[in-house]
Length: 536
Picture 1 (tube, one colour):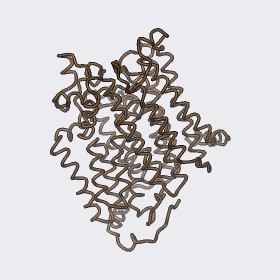
Picture 2: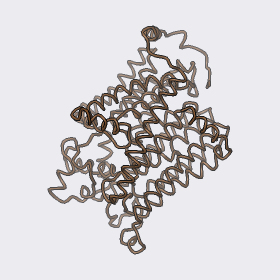
Picture 3: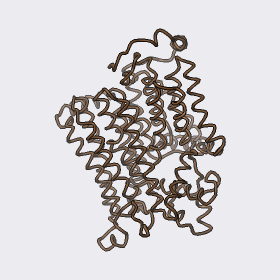
Picture 4: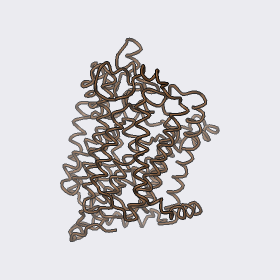
């Protein structure tokens, strides 16, 4: 590990690796690659969203009949490698840009933001790529539009019995799976169907807008949270709206991760203003996806020195949770449980489960899940020891006592630990770490998240289950996903352990826990310290 670090250190001494303008150009080229491939129309990597039928709404692309006359669609051996190269170039550009920022480069924030908005909107007005999840969002909304319950009825149960103009365009493998999303996500799917009518093309457009608009809002809030620190503001733009890995994973795939996170990020904005309002927004976040429980735990930890604020937070969160789950969608609260037990290709888990299956095949899946949960606590502890403390701008207390700083850092710890140890993990999940990570000073987790993200992104260029030849499946799915990506996920885990082992190898001994519990009761004068501003 030290040899790798030394090689990277010498490599990073070259001037071009800190050239911010070069980094920006690589990010732009990466995004334009995605946009052009999608605009060419349906292919093995670009979803077929059905005919526009005269609609002027996006997604815009070369019509199939026109494409056939000019030699489209392109071969999978062209579009897949092109996207691989585009993703890798974008990741390199991201690393170069943030290294330039760490080296003192300060581009104009507004220009960066508007560039990001333009790239994201351009990505959102062409067809989605590689993941057919957005078609399933449309299908669940269609079921609601038909008066059916997507938590009980699957799309396949309907379209196998009769033709449906929306459901017919869905793809495997989730056609027989009920919805696992919270009530707000389900309402967004219903609204997209209401606006899009009986055209999958138009429904997908509205779902794309429900992905890209929250994504833009998240970045805007992050810039505001970093106000007063030009380096953190630049970092916030790079880690969110100009992050090519997120543009690819979240926006190009029209995933609902941004809709999930936007309420939690707004909650961060209110942490220093009102614990009750913070609770309202974190409750709304939980009503999109229950995975936002990690942000809820981070908020509790941030307020832990003041039980009144913890109580206000809890009451605020219970209001939307109780109303939305308890009254409108009680089944949705348990729906996410259907995702437990899955193992995704490209994560750390396939190798481990395969090895176990040779010894105890009947228990290999359940043991893998248990190891993942244990790993979450172990990696979470290690990260809590090594992640740097840096007061979020505007703090009036030391970083270790400021509720917003504590919340942001704890969210990074918990969410990162969950992402890297979960047997089922995908690149678009990483948004929940990239956003709060922007408010920390540069650290090793930056490049580890980039490495993890580029591996999973490349692995799922061939994520669709239709259209690929056996040769591409062997290269794209087996080599890139099951071998290369999984190896990189193991490397990321090893790097986190090495970071802990060589930096702050502190274990949760009995005395450590006792002292920590004693400190929870410390309130009052310590919390009324004079304004400190940002500290490094």
